[in-house]
Length: 321
Image (cartoon, rainbow, N blue to C red; front, side, top):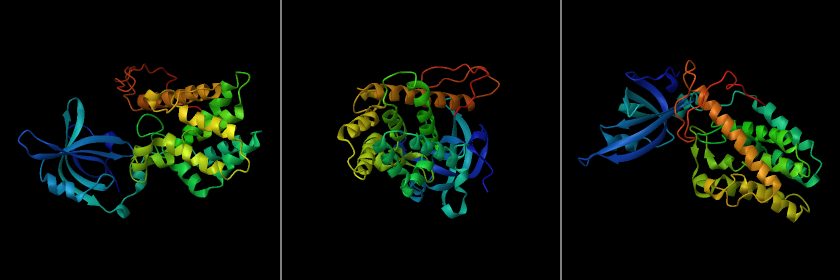
């Protein structure tokens, strides 16, 4: 049974525990000798580490994604904690509890899924409803959809995160887009539900949260469009223009080519989806960042990706949906 978790580790601690080896790269010192840079993880976080001794042997015994038993000590390096590893050995996956190593949503996954299905059933447009039910009737897809994370780090980066994010974006469609007239709400809602479905294959999430080979080579946007095309072929007489508009929602939902969208939003529905997706991912990511900071401090540390500190008001930790 795992007794030490990463969130509790501090400088000076001695380590004798099992973790997931999330990263492993070989480096070379100035004298030409090798060393090993690693990152280890459990459900509470990640910490960097280094192996100085018996490097080649250690590297040959384990691969990224393995469970490993580590012995060593923790020090500070460039204002961050660093694990100096003395011994590292692989651990049989059957001897560990996977729930100790993967963070997961605190919400009821089945309940969230039923809410998404209920939104589908309330649609008026028959072809889009049939398309979504083609996904819901696919047991393999549903299992992955309930399990996949929505990201590796920034937002909803945990088991069930994709479903949680999808439901949140779908609910925001009614609250935000419903303010405007002339919006194809069924089309926008379908785009909201399907915009990130490629993430069920973009990520590997059986032991650690990381990108799959397919995800690195294609991205969830390309994978998602492929998945939608496959299901559209099963819906009789699906309108060609409707298919085109739906796929445009998926390929443009990141908003710009700089952020990974093959095309920028070119319909009102696509513009709305881009901003709604941005709202949910940013708010959730910032709240998760705040929750991991010192609760006694009014300001967070510096958020490198967003380039700022955040002030924690009394309402910052409130969670919706």
